[in-house]
Length: 592
Image (tube, rainbow, N blue to C red; front, top):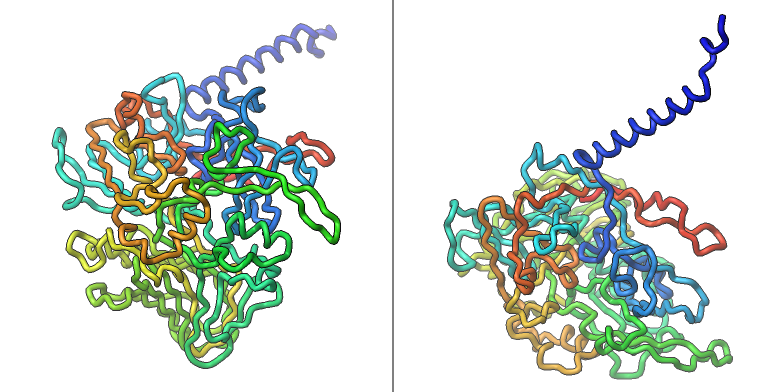
């Protein structure tokens, strides 16, 4: 037998390799063209859901991990910062509000890398078989320059009139060719599915990152028990209550300013007069708090050197002051309270409370039957909602009570117990008992609480989160896209400093107009869709395209697909280097 009949020739090997590569390339081309494609998020318009160019940092005080936008360092979407552009040197922690210096000459001599944006897979075949859906993250060609791909959340569907008010989205369905008038009657608030809502929520307080040393100095605690019935653990991360009667553990939003931190970081209490009062919760996003080394990009932010005494040795250290504009100027009343609850001894009730606009929204769980009652205090027009929960007898449960989008929701062990029963939007219509434009009052300085009645309970992993707030702005907003109050107390203050903002947010006598926001409306026809970014304060989305002479909508033929998966969030550093190539598996995730 001829050996060539049994052993492939070198030529045949090469040919098979070429054929295999050709088939692989053909399949890849087909997959890219018709099924899925990889994209890189270039900017922070979808932060913190999806990251554009950013710095990943861990707060130098409380250890809370957060991101700072670094899009200023590279305006062409490349992986490396460009020469001549400013460098991000500081950012403010959303947990403890410490403004952290991350410049190359930082005292810790750490290198804070800037990473390119998340890399995602996009399902390009989605719209061939399914209609576009509200709240889905969507990739499309920018109508003003169709060779550029944008990514936003689809908020408005074809043949709808959409208006934005008080941070929420309202919709009225239109008959073809009909143009509505006004922004009230017939519009319905749009609620998010739980998965999308949880993805869009932003942190207000995570008690796992509490700073016991501040409390020892005398700083006001965020979580407190008025009658001292809740006993704080030594690390301050959990609380126990075993006393008879009804007792509440209450949250207040106490946020140190930069000037406060100049003392606190040195182990001293600020002098009398420093801001140490509870404040309203706002739409602050740590991602947007970046400070650069260029004054051209900074408004009221400063970076200076100071002498700091460390154990008798005087060291030079950077002191950073944040601008008032970087701290969030819109009051957010849509909140969620969550905790891990351990029922050590069954009793009568476990209680949750959220406050919005001076109104108490309540969840009362009977630990003898497991039945939960959701209600609105002093509001007989709302029929209490009764649902069954697994909180019966002893055990540990993860519980989340939500008041968002004019609906009360209860989630236990990751499963939503309520299914639409807790809606109260009809009470918020014009002339209703819970008007949408009502202002906050003193009760909103204590916006969340957990209570217990005649039971022994331990709570830990306490978290307060807020809903995403859509700022009502358009081409008539005069470039003031940070605050949508019609009569804002911030507008009369110049310069708007951090302490001025804190003073306003802690003074109820200045809140008379806080519920009265601007309203913007967008009307869509056949095959027109409204796209908004999750980072509302820093997103050039449908609200603002008309400033460039571009319609506010995306035509159907420019829709590319739905974002489904973050496959490369950015790598982790190879130990001992600044090279980030180790897969960051923990942040690989589905996109909600």
